[in-house]
Length: 399
Image (cartoon, rainbow, N blue to C red; front, top):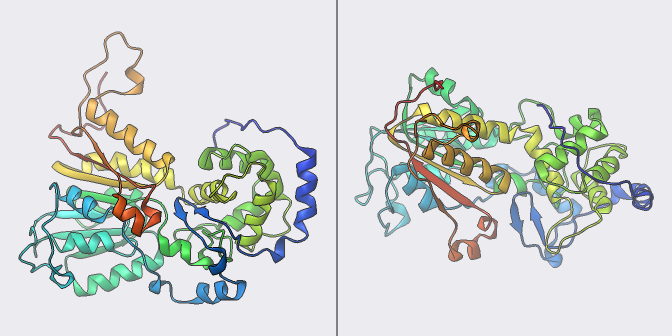
């Protein structure tokens, strides 16, 4: 992946560097930081009296990840959006959420859940689909795929793809599918991935510095940190984490002897960071940046959005949840361009060419107060949705 040459404007701080040097000797004994923190993209309210010990964290990391609980964010809103309805029929009992439920919409067609996770959105969507419908689910995470395959064993409508949603067109083509009726995606990291310290996403639970969504392929963050130079690391922290102090933090990280502990890495970043924000762990943006970079998350989002145009049928629905500004900005700008037929390359032209409009006017929905009170990690979520218009897709637009 290429790194932009927009170098962060950090100035050297000799006093701060000496502070970092003196702290490195004790970093390996670091434990979970006892403060309220934003864990990657999500807000985590932590109580110092309930902080896990090093031993309990290790035990939890070794447990079956399938046991972790994940509350799907904007559940009702997203499924309603991908089905093109204002709201789902009210359910009187959880047991009624099945394909035979008399309150089900019984929608036919082909739908895609591009980020299956633990299947919260998929299961609710299935409860609204007819028996002849098809749901294709994607995920990079091997554990999520295991959950998806278990679901597919009990519901023949489910087809599973262990890959990034960036492979949308090719993966669907391999199934003989060229277009679908609805696409939904819940971007970023899931609660089970954060809560399992062994995955390396958390700076509050110890584990290997991995951070790969798909642990079966690619290099880990630890392997990358061993090879990367200070300048490239600083650019990654600045570009993908919007970290203003990226140079200082990059120098501190590169002084570490090894990268085998997320708590040790978080402690080094904490010491190097000169400007702590209340309620936010100093390592938040750096961990986010390394995770986004190593998984090519923004590149995958761009590829997915572009493929949504030819993949969606006329009248098909796109519904995407994001949790931070880097993702949300991309979705917003993509839908604005393709709903207005206005493109940056046309801005300075005296007579801009007529461009196709591939989407209706997009809408944005956030979580309710009730949802954020029950699930604080939902508070930064935004759902953006739009309907595919009937304009034929053009691979290249003539000027």
